[in-house]
Image (cartoon, rainbow, N blue to C red; front, side, top):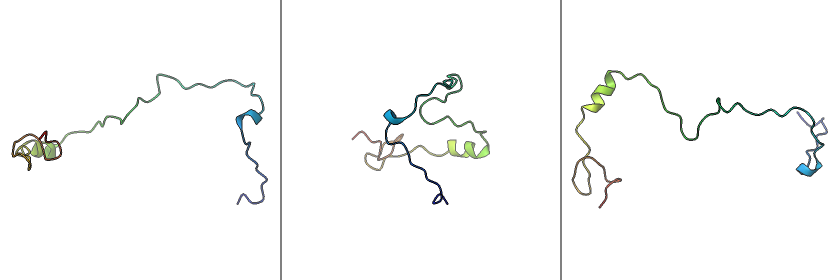
Length: 73
């Protein structure tokens, strides 16, 4: 598709022609923060079922509240 075009990229920024146009900067209020965005979801009946499950039991030490991966032993 681009075979008929003669496009030669500039090898380095030193070869770029000087730019005299306006500088466009992003609006700081509209920039997204770092990290994964928080999920805003509507909770339903299924979430109530998950909360009523028995607490986790660690297969390493047998205590409740954590799993084998998060075990401190």
